[in-house]
Image: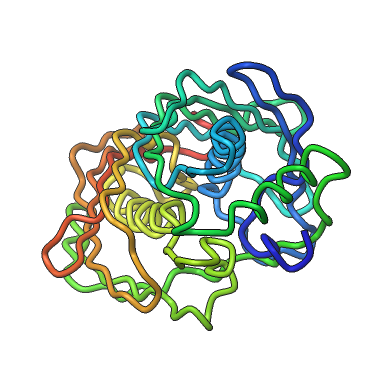
Length: 281
């Protein structure tokens, strides 16, 4: 695969394919500086995308979309291997519908339920023949290991902050030459990954929940469930987004929050999230 898909590809090898089913694996390089939990969902989504693209002869590819539920059971660390699988319920020229899972050492780490990816022309995003060749590599010898070096923490500036109730912030998207992942996502049309946007939003949610959950002084909170994810528009390099997080309810078990992202008054993304103690999912 050469230099292609070296900075934001999370499938090392496709190990099994059958109608409606695809399995693979991805090893997080030991030298990776940061691998946020949302990238486990990215790995499962990419695996489902390979199934969808190959079934449509690489004329179309899924981009962004909707995720009904994302459940987090454990975090992934550099050096660990994700065993990933996706069940493709439907795939046609309009969209791919799928669910999937990621496991670490035989234990479920993440589960995706009721995801939909709209299909768009491949040529807008990448060269079909190059993507087909990459697929053949993944189904054969596999990709060169150790390609991913990590992603930087999101550049967030906090604005309005009502402790335990509401946060408003801005997210500065890096320029194309500042972030290697734009070369993978995507070569012909760089788009800020929706999973990295969710990483930024859920980071705000954890910060706000830590203020809202009673008796939280000695607890480590983390995202346990994300629902109703909708990515409504592409975000280009260099853009600036307005983010919002609002607590809908909180008790000793955790907090429930609403997340939004806007650009120039236009809705970019939204989701609901639950935050609880690490390992409580």
